[in-house]
Structure formats: C-alpha cells, structure tokens
Length: 503
Image (cartoon, rainbow, N blue to C red; front, side, top):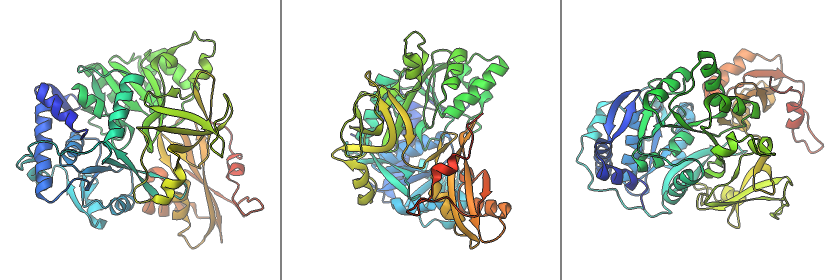
C-alpha cells in the first residue's frame, strides 16, 4: 500500500479540516492539500515520471515541502530528501547517486544547485512550480507494494561517502504505528510543529499526523527559534515536536528566563544525540511530562528503542536515574539484542554491539551490496553502536563504534572533513574528532600536520568552499605528527583524550 493513501483517506473523511499553516496563517485544509498533491502527481506523470523514479527535495521547512512529498508519492515515485544545510556540491552527489531526474528546491537553494546539477531543478514559488500545481489531477494515488521504495535517506558511513538507505512504505507505516504505541497517540486536534529539518526526524514524523488529520505548522523562521516555538505552541495547543537534545536545552533555558511555562506543548520526542540527564531533568521540572526519547538510525528510522513519557518523568522507581540515562526499551515492532563480535547474544549488563531486526529495518543500501552485507547479517541490523541491556530490557548507549560526531543533533562524519582538508597540497595529515561542547553536545576539531606553518584562515576558507558550514572545524590544532599505533592507525582516542569534558 502507498503510504500517501493516508492523506487521501483523511481528505475523503474531513476535507475541511485545517491542514497546513505558515506560522498562524492557514495555507490549506485537507481537501486542498490532497487536491494540490493530485495535481502535482498528474503533472509528474505527464512529464514521464514512473513508479519507482526518484524525486529529490532540497527544501527548507515550508508548507510546499509536504505538497511536493505527497505529490511525488501519489505519482508512485520515491522521494530523496536532502538536508538543506548541505553544500550544493554535496546535494549534487546525492542527486547523481540516487538517479533522481528532478529536484524541487526552495528559492534560497535552487539557483546554486541548478548551476551544477545534471538533474532538472524546479524552484518552488516559481512559475514552473505553479504550472505543475495547475495541471490536470491524477485520479488517485498510484498503487505501490509495501516493500517498494518510498524514501531514499542519505546517511554517511565511516568512509565518508553518503549511502542511500532504502526506506519502504512498510517501514514508514510500521514506524508511524509504533509512534502511536510507544510515544503518544496523535489526535485530530493535535498539531505537528516542524522546527527541525524535514529531511530528517521531523519529516519522518509527518505521516502519523496526516493519518490522524492533525495540523502541520511551519515556523515563519524556517527553523528553530525558542520564542517563536513557544508562541506557536501556545496558539495551536496539542503540539507534537521532534527535537535534538540541544534544542530541548535551548528551549528550556529560554522558557525559564522568560517565565514561559510552555503552554500548548503536548509531546516532544528527542533524539539525534546524547541527552545529558541534568538537561532532561531540568526540562521536565519546567515543562512537565511532555517528553519521550527514541533511538533510531537511518537504517531503522526512529524505530529501535523508546523511553516513554512515564520513564522520562518518573522519579519514584529505585533505578529511575539509570533508566533516564538509557534510550529505553525495544519498540513494539522490533527485536533488539546486544551481541559480541561473533553475533552471540550477551547477558544482561554486558557491553556489545546493538543489533535490531523487524519491519522497520531497511532491506539494504541503494546500489551498495558491499555495505549492505557488512551491516545486515542473518536478518539483523548491526548498528555500529555499543551498548548494554539490563534485565528489564532498558538499553544504555556506551559508545559509538564509528567515529561519528553529533553536533546539535546533526551527524558529521570526520572522513568528509578530512578528505576536504587533504585536498590542500600543504596539508600532510589530518584527523578530525568531536570535542565536548556544553550546548551542541560536540563540536568539530581538526588536528592538522602541515608541511609548513599552519594557516587557520586558509584551512577554514577551503572547508567553507567544499563542505557544509556546520561540518567545518570549530578549531584547528597544529601537530608535528599524528599519534599512531604500531600498525600505522591514527589513535583518535588519544586525540579525544586531550579534551576535558563539557562544562
């Protein structure tokens, strides 16, 4: 079943129910949302888009995002959401690798991408976009099988090369229903507030709100602003949000300083990085029982474990602090276990790799059999994350086996930064690691070996020309040589050990 059928059903049942908002201003009800998606789908089919084709979305958070998403799905295509923070060259790689023949981009992003992309780029709000929305509508959403590609999510591995995760209609449906079981039941009177990028967790969470006929609210700022978020929550009420831990921290600090109790917030799901216990305790003390945590990966989107609202709030259980420091228990549709390097299940509290299997787990990486074989073994997804499970099933993350840096809830892979810096002829060696940061969780630091004196400004300018701004190092440390073991491997653990903990 095509997951976009949920929109068609909601529009059929209650077409006048408000659907899309830009700030407090209504943009479309469900009948209009559905009609726009059908017209876009009709235009796409007329242009030769066929079931299974890929359509990229390089867009900021705007109401047109969901129209583009559901229009593509109605036509039977798969979407390729691209993080709007990426450099156009990085976005172009994803376009080429996915084989997308068409990309929709917001006005602030379209011109730079169009200059270099082989694929056609259509700017939303342009005459070309309006022409698509004025086309003859498709009669109904194109049928798709449950295991057909719906969402091609690009993540990165230890090689630094982005990999496309095959996310199917079945995966999205199962994940959406798990949200209802393991996080919160979405009601028609609720509202999804999109302050985090729709290309990631916030966007993954739109489907259950469409199914329920809830409202979809896009902040006029296009991102996260604490004052704006609290104002919109108070106005709409029943607000569900996805937030990175750094967003929760910033929201709490602002709300406490402003004396704002957070009226209207109903459910905040946090994920995407480590949440310090002190921060979530402070948030719960101020906002009350509105928080839940999930742990997932692109390979099992939002779907591995969940720490319920009760567990986040409870202070009566004798082990409540341990539970609060965990990522919760296996979600309803998956199995989770801790294994040694040979795949044998470890006893309670033993540290090993976190493995998961179930209908939310990917079938593989896009056109990358080698990476698929390394990650999927005997039906289990090897997450690359180390953790332990207690006797009650609560999983606590211990470390990441990969060198992933999570800054502000956004994944940064050191190899991408290292490769950019190594393009410079005067850079001999480089190692990039994460340094603890009190607000962002981690920040990027590059240890650089140069053939002459290090020019920090030149290194920074080069990074800004090659990679997304948020990935560039916040500090450059000159070394005469990188520390290595007897096999020549760089000892990143030793580099990280040179940092103190976050304040």
